[in-house]
Image (cartoon, rainbow, N blue to C red):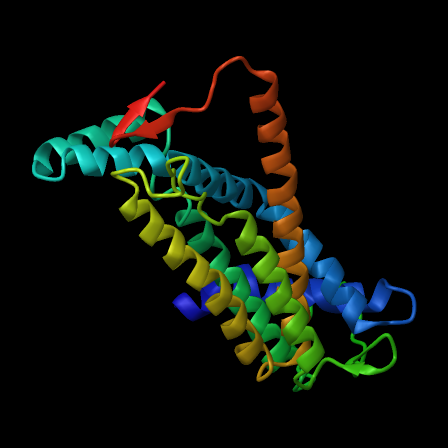
Length: 262
C-alpha cells in the first residue's frame, strides 16, 4: 500500500518529468534534463529549504548566548532548560526547524535515486503517462562524452567541493577571546563546538566524494546541482541578512565572563 502511494506521488511523476525533459530538450541530453529536473525540485522545495537555512543561521547567531547561559546555569539544570527555552522563544527560533525541512526533502532524494538506478538504467518505460512520448532508449551521455550511467569521479569531487563550500558558510563563529588571545571564561564549550563543526565541515564532503564515486553519475550530478543551488540560496540569504544588520543601529551582543552584555 505504502509502496503504491510512494510510486504514484513521487517516483512515477519524477520519472515521467525526467523523460519528458529528455524528449523536449534539444539534443536529447540526459545531463541537461537532470539539471532541469533538479532546478524544478528545488523550486518545489524552496520554502522548506529557505526555512532550514534561516534556522541554521539563527542557531549559529544564538550560539554565544547559548554557551553563556550554559556556563551561568551549569549547576541548575531546571533553570538552564527554562532559560534556553526563553532564549529560543524570544528570538523566535525552533531548534528542530532546521532538521524537519531536510527530512521532507529525503523522499525526493530517494525517488530520484530510484529513477536513475531502475527507471533509466533498465529502460523501463511502462510507467510513462499517455502524454509522455516513449523515447525507446535514453542515451546516458552528458555533453556527448560523460556517461551518467556509470560512476564519475570528477562529478563526485565537485559535489564534495560544493558541500564544503556550503558547510563553510555555516561554520560556527570563533569564540570570544581576550586581547592577549586567551579564551574568555565561558567560551570553552563554544570552542569545542567550533572544532566539531570544523571536523564535520571536512568529513561530510569527504564522505560525499567516497559515496559519489560508487553511485551513477546521474545521481551525483543531481547532488552536485542541488548542493550548488542550496549554497547560492545560503549566500544570498546571509548577505541579505548581513546588509540589514549593517544598516541597523543595534550592536552585536558580547559574551563577557559568561554573561550576555548588550
